[in-house]
Each structure stands twice: as structure tokens, then as C-alpha cells.
Image 1 (cartoon, rainbow, N blue to C red):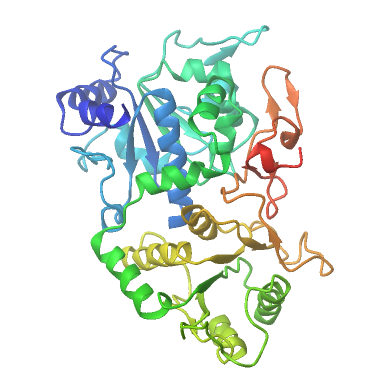
Image 2: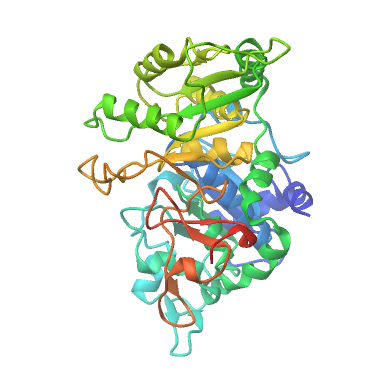
Length: 444
């Protein structure tokens, strides 16, 4: 159904041309069955993949065409997921005044945003909770949704997750979504979507796994890099251990990070502690280690520690030094390493890291998560206790939604999110975050 909608209303069709014309002219709604959700590309590749997945699911639930403002490198990374059409947003010309030309300029306080319309009274909320357009008394041609954690993401923006507001958004032909989050758990808690999502995903911890494998098909150059590296370094090992190291605070001592990694590996008994690199009875190397990090320093020390103990060796595909946003070559290497991690049998990941979330979701493996201080904190030690375990097993393979809304729209108050339903739990790495788990395996 979604593929048919994308093909009928997507770029290159008469319906799309007419929809863009009406958007640019500010004309009202036309009931032709074609409505659109534009995802605005934002932040690093891991964030973008989680956000695109969230946007796609929201588009399916609301019967909208998904268009990805993919930046300069989307076509270098992914094949088109929808047959006979494109999911990439065609950009207007340089001299166009189309709202589609200004996508990177919207902010949380934009007057075209849901949050600002609620604050200004352009969207009115009655005493009984009904929501309606008041100034003017008709839906706008487009609306901006600011769902990115941080500045500009406040109470009114989070009302996106209320049922009454969703019914109102259904009247708007074009929605522009700005997010760096995996908002899927929030959609499960949004009343108009709950029943359909519960039926759609009996296994709640497999949402990203299924959607990600449907949406993301690496281009031939990326897939060649994945398969060639895997065959040459990892394929011969019976047990592949993936270690994903991400450091958000440059003040954090590398030695402290290394000790955390090694303590986690030892505590979880992921690698042999004997000094002999053994194999199985047929001579196949038993273990291989894949390290992904922006720095080579950790790889070199892990290799020194375990290189003589694991017959499959310790490997690092690249070390970029720093993250580079919107750099096609950098992102192609990052994507290939996410897929290489997803081919490992066990994973050790860094808390807060969307890179790790993507790898564990594609693999459908619960990782051992090493805690990190919040990315926005001033001190790398914030919230960390040296007496705590170096890593904890994640409650599920699902990514964490870092910035959920705790507001119960019907009750008009905040609630404890991990007590609302058996399949929502707090994340082990982000105290304020939530994630999907299988209800049968939870401790609810």
C-alpha cells in the first residue's frame, strides 16, 4: 500500500507537480489522496537513519508519501527502497520561494511550527481537549514539526504525541519533520496509532530490525566494502566480537575508556583469557574482534591485549580521527562499519551512540552497553559511578528514544513512562529515554 502511494503521488507524477504548485502558492487542501511528509536531514549518519526509520513509520500510519531531504550524500549511501519512484526530495531552483527551499532554516520557534502555533493561539485547545485551527480557521498548506531533542523542543512541541493534535495534523497537506531521534516508542504511546502498531509488530523489539532492513539497502560501493572486508578478516571465525567505541567528551581520559572496554569484555567473558590463540577441532579460528572507533589508539591497545589470544585477530577498518557531517566518503565508511558490526555475534557498544543503535538493530542482537555521560553535560563523569559495572546488557535490541514526552494528554499530567505499558522500558544508557521491549520478557 505504501509503495503504491509513493509511486502514485511521488516525484515525477502529475499529482506531485500539482501538490508542489499548491504548496508554493499557499492554496488550500485538495482531496486527491496525496499528502506528504518531508524528513529534513539532520546530524550524523546514525541519527539520520534512526530518524528516517521513524519518519517512514509515521508516514505509513498517516498515509503520507515519505520524501527525504537527503543532503548531498544520500544517493551515495542507499539504493531507492520504493520501486518505480524516488524517495529523495527534488530541490527547487535557487531563485524559488517555495517552502521546500528553506527546509534547513526552520527552528523550534518558527511561526510555521506546531509548537509556535499552539503558543500563539493559531491552534486552539478547548476545555474538553479538542484542538482546532483558529487563526485562520483552516489548515495551513504546510506545518513544521520540531522533534529534535535540545533547544526549541519543549512542552508544546511534544504535544505532537497527543491524539487530538494528530487528528488536526491529518488535515495538513505537507508536514516537514526535523528530528535526530528514534521517535518510534513515542508513536506506540500515541493513542491513534497504538492499536495498529501493536498488531503490526507482535515482537516489539524487532521494529527497527524489520523497518531498517526494508528501507536501507547500501549502494554497490558500500556493499562491496562490507563484503570484501568481512571475507578477508572475519568470515573464518566462529565467534565475532564487535566493539564500538564512541567518546563524546574529549576530556575523558583514553585510558579510562580502554579500561572500561577491557573490563566489560572480561566481565562478560566475551574473549578467551588464556595466552594461547586456539581454534576448534577443524582448525577454524574461534574468535575475531572488530573494533570501530574514530581513533586508532583503542584498537592498538586491544590488539596488544588480545592479539595473541584470538586466532582470528583484532581488526579496525578505519580511523577517521573525527566525525565529518555530510562528507560522502566518510559516511560511506561509517555505513560499511555499521553493517560489519551487525555481522558480529556479540556486541559491545557505547551509551548514547546512534551508530551503535543502528548496528545492534540491524543485527537484532542485544549489546553490552558501556555507560557514557550525557553528550550535553560539561563533565564526562556526570552520572557515572566508578563502582558501577563497566557495561550492562540492553533490555532489547531496539534503539533508545532519547527525548520522549512524559505528558499524558488525556489525564493532563506527566506520568512514569515505564509504567504505562509492559513493552516500554527505560534505557540502560539514557536515564530519561525509553525503548521498546518484548512484554513477555520484561519485569513489568
